[in-house]
Length: 260
Image (tube, rainbow, N blue to C red):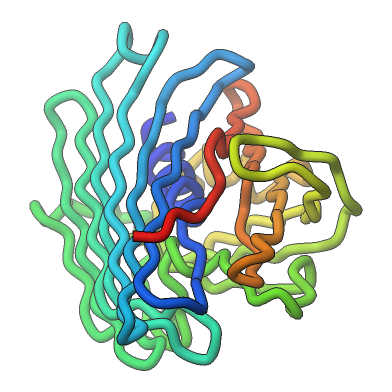
């Protein structure tokens, strides 16, 4: 569960928060909950700032909550900086600090024109013999896990193949249409576009790892996108992730724009 938490949950939380804006400086504060089999296990809060010069910065905090606090203490802090270009968020630097129990790791990734120019993990982990390394080819035309799930309003959202790198693992998320569903939360009420998701690990993981194998074979992963009319973008408001321990859900409990 810890491995899946860092690989998928942090990325999905981060992707839920960022909404490009077309006005002057804009701030978004968003809040989320994650549940396992219906029980809340973590909460998150993010602050997104988009400046007049189209640069942006996103800071987020994720903490274990509820029953998860009785098992282990999980804390994640993530930040990304970049620019809004061609109606997309294009990252320059992505950082993830992740702590579970006494184990601490920091992941830093630098991008240039969509390509990864450096990626470090501190402390550097020991890799097993079954480790599949990330190749140079896998580091080209890659999306960061925060900006990768944000689409402009005229995009066919559920026909995307998203090449994501989370600081260690390179994965593809292949989206497919599954219709619409009603969704409401603080700041939004309306129809959400439902996409099925096929998870394909490419590199940066241990071959045969059970949680990744399980997720890659599942056809039950979903992401729901809601359109923010003011910004004319789609962003996720709900994520469903099947695991061996039960279904993990990530739900936006606040979805809205706040002018600074």
